[in-house]
Length: 264
Image (tube, rainbow, N blue to C red; front, side, top):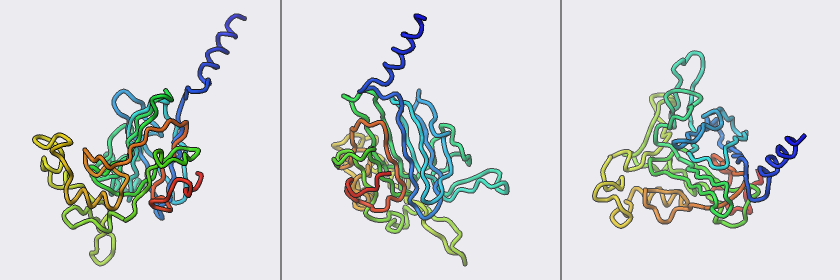
């Protein structure tokens, strides 16, 4: 009988205020086409959401994660995992041709949601959206219930970066008919050219020496809240503690204030 109080105390400790046992990500697809979300953990953290899944237009899925999870989440597009395409492949964000990435990092360019969770409310969890390696989809991230402070909200993009992408950064694919191709992603200058000045490395490896470029400013103009290069000081990087977070691909109101976003 003495075991029961001990078990009760252990359970009570898990649900005490200020202690989050696990976190829920509500992953939504508001794009007019399917998205295959994927997640890759940082070293020492588990795979969440089976590493990847199919999400039709207008659908959502809950993904559970430990309260201290660190990793990245992104959306893949143009995937084909049919029986006639045994190898599998995604036009953007591909992870070795697999539906379930199982911890593998997606191939750039892809818009990345970077997450660093803390179970201690005083420390707060941090998250950001990065196009340092390029862009494929607009993404919005916020806490649930929605925090009215813009400090906890990362809006989508004010403009479609794929439509504005210059030819030297474009990732194109066939399928438009009559030999036409379509822009499915936009590479960063670092990914496209590999130069230290664009990649913030070598002699340009500090915030003082790496100040961005005409290309990063183009990403900044389209998606003001995202990291457009490694030392982007203007990016939104919230530190907000919550048991639930919302990740929405193709948010319906790009740039909308938190109080106007649907309570998903």
